[in-house]
Each structure stands twice: as structure tokens, then as C-alpha cells.
Figure 1 (tube, rainbow, N blue to C red):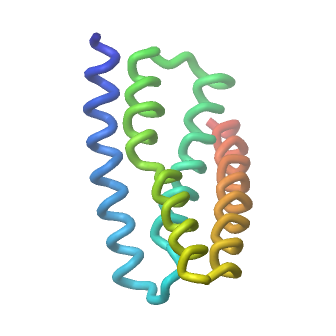
Figure 2 (tube, rainbow, N blue to C red):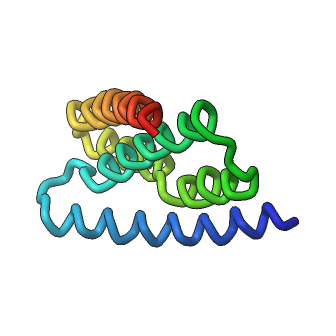
Figure 3 (cartoon, one colour):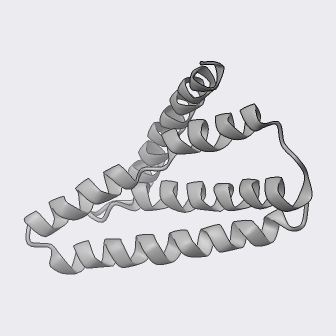
Amino acid sequence: MLNATYIFLGGGIGAVARYWLQGFVYRHVSGIFPYGTLVVNFLGCFVIGVLMTGMEERFVMNPTLRIFLTIGILGGFTTFSSFSYETIALLREGEFLLGLANVGASVAVCLAATYLGTLLGKLF
């Protein structure tokens, strides 16, 4: 039950951070492409790469803290459900190239971010 409480608290923190970051991006970048979601997913993938690599290769982290950070905060922060909905919306609106670009960019950028995060995680 204690782990569920930490996941709940972390999820709230992650969701609010996502709301703020997406809002910031959308205030500074115009257009119909979902840049805010792409930025959030990139950052979330990068951070999970750093954290998981650090926890697996450099130091042993308290399991409760690991759950709080990864399942809680990052689970609330990353937005693949938003990504999926926005992609379908683009396709429904006839924006096939933008929809495919969103899928390609999200997968490529997030895989790259996770890889970069694992490289950074090895430095700690």
C-alpha cells in the first residue's frame, strides 16, 4: 500500500510538470504539430534512461524511491496516451504527413533520448 501512495504522489507531480512544460512549449511554438507532447516524451525518455542506467550500473537505489521516480513521476509526466490521441486527430483531420511525422519523430527522438540518457547515466 505504501508503494501505491508513492506512485500516486509521484504521478501527480509528473502530471503537473507535464502540464507546465507542454503549456510553455505551446506558448512559444505555433502550428498544429504537437511539439509540446514531443518535448515531454523526449525529456521523459531521457530522464528514465539516466535514472535506470544509474540505478542498474552505478548505485543501488531504495526500491521505494525507484518506484516513486519512475512509475510515479515519469509515469505521470510522459504522455504517450496524448501522443496517440494527437496522432489519430491529425490523421482524422486529413493531415496524414503530419500524423506520420509525429509517429516517426516521437519514436526516433524518444529512442535517441533514452540512449543519450543511458550514456549520461554511465558517467555517474
